[in-house]
Image 1 (cartoon, rainbow, N blue to C red):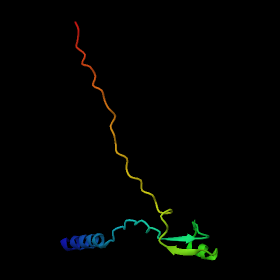
Image 2 (image 1 turned 90 degrees about the horizontal axis):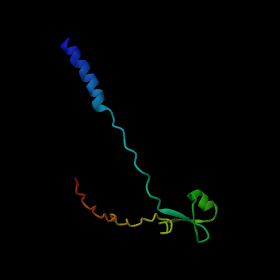
Image 3 (image 1 turned 45 degrees about the vertical axis):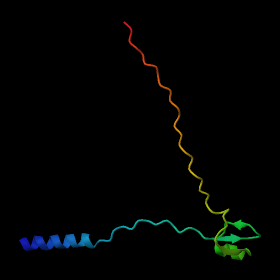
Image 4 (image 1 turned 90 degrees about the vertical axis):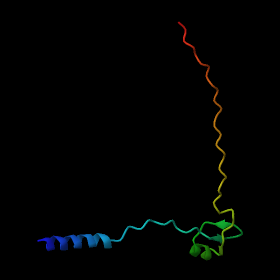
Length: 89
């Protein structure tokens, strides 16, 4: 009886141990190509760009790169102390 229980436990535990863990999704790589059509950057795929007569160039110009603004410093508002009220009888 103990051998049967041990065999069942090993089968169940081995399937858990060998199961693949779910992969976390990875973000897509940053785009490093752009379509240059008549000296302007155009939002097109490579196939559409070449068909329209544009050039598919590596390293998109800075105008199409995301702009990261510097963080503004956090300034706490000035708080004036309240006068202490004295109890009167």
